[in-house]
Amino acid sequence: MAISVRKAVLPVAGMGTRFLPASKAVPKVLLPVVDKPLIQYAVEEARAAGVEEFIFVTGRGEATIRDHFGHDEALAAYLAARGDNAALAATAGAVLAPGSDAFARQEEPLGLGHAVLCARDLVGDEPFAVLLPDELLFGDPPCLAELVGIHGRTGGSVVALAEVPQRETGRYGIVQVAAEGEDGALPLAGMVEKPDPARAPSRLALIGRYILQPGIFARLAAQTPGAGGEIQLTDAMAVMAREEQFHGVRFNGRRFDCGSPMGAIQATIACAMERPELRQELLSFLREVTPSP
Ligand code: UTP
Image (cartoon, rainbow, N blue to C red):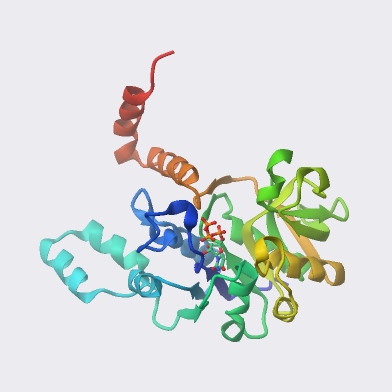
């Protein structure tokens, strides 16, 4: 029996320090990859997985995120008067249906786990998705849709994983695999946030896509600050993985860490290459700025 996941939490209340000064007045997730803000890619991925309600956990910059997903009558009228149907369609594509967006406030950036806990009342008592929009993922099927499919078979909680170099384990949550698993679903025994390479239980890292049981909220509420003095989602998931069904799924698509300028630059180039109207000019430009060997 397929279990649908109706709600997604998008935590976007972090300070985005790696993107200053750009992220000072504009939330990092509204920075564009080509011509679409990061957060819209995440919303589209969630929508493609069947999500119907989008819960944004915001800090500073909430109003601009609301504006992005809201209808702008003046802009629509301006574009319609000019007959600019492409721009009209692009702006309309960003608008979320009335009642399908909700906002929770995280007053202080006390960590990803704390941000998810802020969405507790809006999620209620059902399994829900979490997407970190600064991880930009392109997959076929899209990553969250794959998790939803596996969750339909396994139940419990399901997270996306990618193999990272041993020396980089200290930048991620790293999982401990319990058994081989079937059909791509790896049973997990635990996980640890930002382990030293020497102590990492594997090289499989959490990459910002999760389907979690609502029981995570009680674990988060009981959590004391972990790595970096923050309430870590990974710590609460580690408790849950010891007590309930918890699976990991290797993501085989392309991944860009757009929380850092280098990841965002790479994502922009990769996405522009896929656009026929941009590709040739971009290739010529890249040849021009690349020193010949
Ligand atoms: P990151 O650590 O990648 O984002 O958190 P950050 O803290 O904004 O960035 P830097 O490290 O300062 O450059 C992953 C996701 O979790 C959210 C962030 O907004 C991002 O989408 N987050 C993080 C919160 O919503 N609240 C927090 O307290 C921490």
